[in-house]
Image: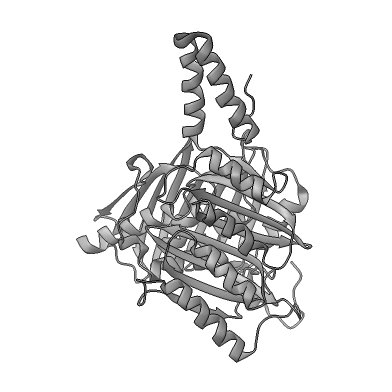
Length: 441
């Protein structure tokens, strides 16, 4: 570390103590890369560390967090999405530089864009209407994320002016955008809770989406469809002797799960003093020892229930619902309006979306179900792909129920003879042509 000439020894000591120390080790664990972070404790420091790792789409398989007095020690066992250790030196260097700062550098990828924040009641075709309004108002969508949960929708959309390529700063145009989008979100029955806002500020998109849905109280609403097996198990108990509240979360493992839980605890003004994170197969087990920012544990039954509800919502907001469709094509004006209109016309509902644009190429991900939240019919998916373009829109993730259906067809062969063999082969060939299974032999 290089020191400025005017710093005295005390100032150097303060900087050393407040600057996180990071060690990345590939030798200790045979299956994961260890990322160790030591630093002075401050509110939000755990979230900063987890955010750096999850923004790189790294999978956190295990983690140990401990706070001793005013000192904080984290150990993360991480892999890439393929389960491999980290070997790319540029990635390792980025992690070290990002974590070794007391003021993490937020992403500048949205500089020069205008951010639109939308919340309201979800319905089939809503996203199509939103993108149609933006296209009509000459707004080019560069990046966006859309979440739905418990019948509510939250979206953060980054746009620029189609003609100038600049952020939208004209106050009258901003007023028009807000008014038109608010009317779309209101629909026929959401006059009070529909909200729109326009901002030039740069923020962490996924953290902001959690905050928006929390403010919208999605956790306090009844889900339209709820599969009990998918509901995370959350318990909260007080360890009276040590003055901690102990939070346990058990659910299916997925990427960014730890971020979603820690983000929610942090924004609810809880401090994580100790934690243990573990994954076994596809199951995740997380245990947190927390207190309020004022040092007190959870003090009432309503508060305990609220923490449980909020953590279940945090996990559920990003749950994988429906068929994953990936769109890769040259970007153009009104592309998103056209694509989502095709979804709507075929009765598909978008449960989650990730929109991005790189060098005039649109890279978009949509999770779709039928109109009431059930799995979409493969014939409908095929019709949509035919309309948009088979080479542009591809099925990338297959819900388990499709695989189970194909397996049942296969098992029926031995019972029904050659006729069922023929039918089973046709079914599997159709699934293969849709891209829903890897082979049909």
